[in-house]
Image (cartoon, rainbow, N blue to C red):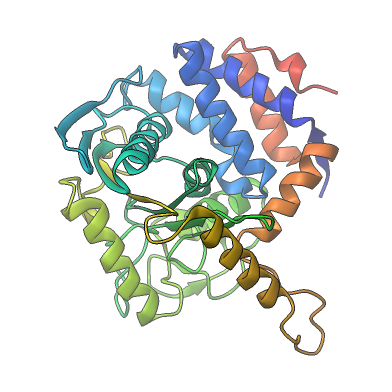
Length: 351
């Protein structure tokens, strides 16, 4: 497949310009741009710049409220309930994780629950922010329905992602970020955009039969829970934290990302200082020891290296920062066309 490779700084400037043309202020436009390009840098292309037109059109169509102002409904020393006021999910979530980290630094541990938000991109982005402040984070969100409960063939749950983030010392940090479906629905969208088939076992069509055609999945089909009933069990827990606890919409009542209505997605942030039980130096030294011993475990035949959660993404980030971000011809052309439509500076991403 033909690919265009764009320097990440230029891709971020282009993305920022698009959202400035949409009508966001400079800080909000940069925040969304930095988030999307960060996803591409980590190799999470399904949550990267391919989402520019979708996000921008929801803002233009007023399905998402312009601006970034949220409301704190219940603000206590160790917890806060946030009303996202239907603002862009990335802007709502960034404020929420910053608030959670601030409270955790002051009080040891903090919880922030969010309602009335929208799709908020890649969870690892927020986990990385917590790590930069020597905090451990657990982050969850619900999403628009695209997955059945185990054994069902009707959409009920979203892909309900969960992320945990842990700082390291001399060794790198650990960031586990995953959808609780076999695969994130964004990867189905990306496969469809690239005219690619998907692997068997990822999803079913609207008749409840296995399919390798991403268009069948997007046309009323469903992704499946990872690990069968175990994944389904985890989804129920995540849905409870993200929506029932926070007062957001749950399950089939969450608005779709392409629907002309509010999504009312819920998020949950649990952040704690890494030194609440022992010194930060001791914590980091123990983390480093565990990481080194994991890496040195005797390997199975055919395995060259044991990777830690998030390590492959960090290696990819280093590589793409040097070499640029590869975009399929389909995605690249779509961005050029949309950029021209928005009167954004497409020269930033042209060869």
